[in-house]
Length: 65
Image 1 (cartoon, rainbow, N blue to C red):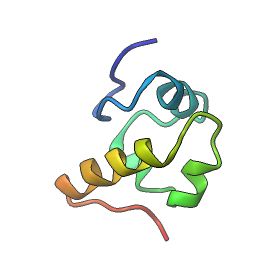
Image 2 (cartoon, rainbow, N blue to C red):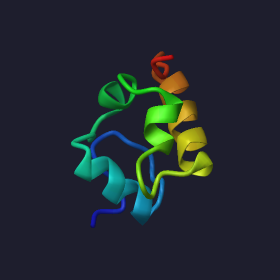
Image 3 (cartoon, rainbow, N blue to C red):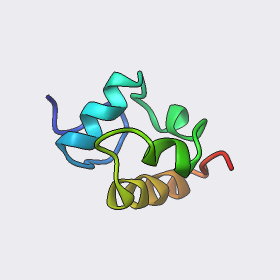
């Protein structure tokens, strides 16, 4: 398991695995999901979602709500 996937920030092995299983490898793909959708993935917790939210904001993106 790579420490970092695509342009995603480092969020930890369980969250990386969950995103890969869901086919999510870029911030643009993350922005198509809501926080609730991501939290429903086994291995993705509030800390990972917070890190992803910050990375999305840095790139002018946001979660779907």
